[in-house]
Length: 208
Ligand SMILES: Cc1cc2nc3c(=O)[nH]c(=O)nc-3n(C[C@H](O)[C@H](O)[C@H](O)COP(=O)(O)O)c2cc1C
Image (cartoon, rainbow, N blue to C red; front, side, top):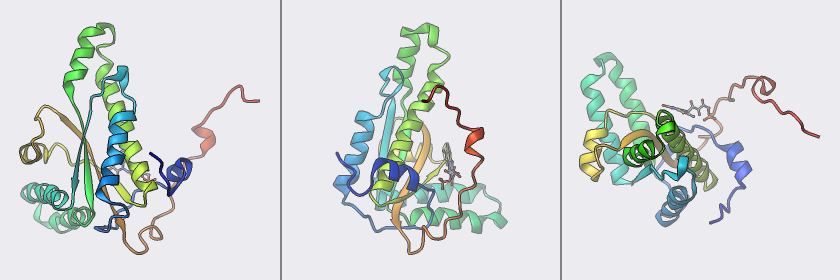
């Protein structure tokens, strides 16, 4: 699969958190499916656990997910905070799709018993595995012309989402990647990303 519209490096550089999204998809649903197939097939996992699970919700299913989150939040958010919370949720709902990133605990448990000496490490490697899938998907969607943002409303929607989309309850929801077409000016309105000096964060030894 080629990401024709942007080189990998440009996609990495261009990727931002974009919140002004709409239901205009720059690519067809088959291509979206292809991106997530590439993610599931090719993104690495610790000890090749293949523990990542991705549930992609498009259009009405995407809307239904954010309705679930909104309904739950309405019951727990103080009344004076509801307007801004609801505005945020409605903003996500305006997008085209949401990818739910889960980790299946079963392969992790198996690895813990097979490689007992690493048992304590497998849960954090499972988080790393999920993060790799999230980052690949975010960047690949960006390369196709989508805007994306990453959310963490778990565990609020876990039970209702599991019931609606037939998702095993023991899968652990890690994040929600919202993606959609870009509203006019969505990129222009982005704040310059604040950056700590690269010299304080990157160290190279031995370069000629
Ligand atoms: C692990 C992780 C968790 C994040 N969680 C959230 C989140 O819950 N909500 C949100 O709006 N953005 C979230 N973000 C987005 C970051 O705030 C954002 O990537 C960072 O400020 C840099 O901005 P940029 O994405 O525009 O480059 C998360 C990013 C990462 C890598």
